[in-house]
Image (cartoon, rainbow, N blue to C red; front, side, top):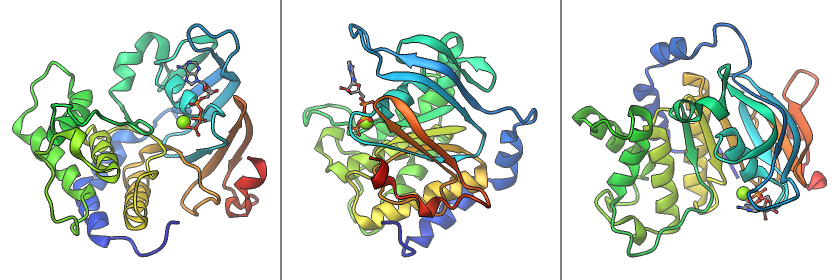
Length: 277
Ligand SMILES: Nc1ncnc2c1ncn2[C@@H]1O[C@H](COP(=O)(O)OP(=O)(O)OP(=O)(O)O)[C@@H](O)[C@H]1O
Ligand SMILES: [Mg+2]
């Protein structure tokens, strides 16, 4: 799926934009504590009796690039939304950067970019692509602060990086409901990047993308993970583990059944995810 033939221009562009030295130093985790910590977390949807996630224990360090996978209905999206603090938990604790997500969710969510699975808009949705990307930026600067000139420039920058040059059309001013599935997916990723997050949660971001776009965007994620030390949690139905992924979490029926880190002893490429699913 992820081949070598990616668009080098977008990689160069992103390297230029993410000022490597300043971002790296900004994001260094000085006390060396895990960035995301879930302890015995059980998530139950409102109105449901049975939990969807059971006793999840997870520690994620700054700069890890995780692949979260597992069968449909296993609880992957639920895990991401639990980490975001937008779902009710029955027991357990969730901390990001040492702060409780339940108490400080709003503040913490400003640091997190989230690409929602299969988002779709009514064709009559009135707002424009540029507004969608700027909403991502607002997540960073605060919804009630005005988007300035520089913010607009940054939003346009991410949109242009994500938009394949071969797509001649510039859909920046188009209503969001009129985009193709792949275009919309790119806009949503651009919106998450425009928030210049410390943590990026991506739920099936490749589902509507053609092979070239998948390669480009995967390599883009690899670069921002490496250069800017951004923690990435990627939910995807891949049948193998790309070499850039540092850890694989496999979820089945609401439980983590495999949590494998790449080490000298563990070669993640040897893991055949399908045998677990
Ligand atoms: N709002 C909700 N209320 C009640 N149950 C829900 C809700 N959303 C999801 N579920 C249930 O929780 C379980 C896990 O769903 P989730 O969306 O987390 O799975 P997933 O692993 O992301 O699946 P997929 O690969 O299909 O995206 C499923 O049984 C689903 O029906
Ligand atoms: Mg899902």
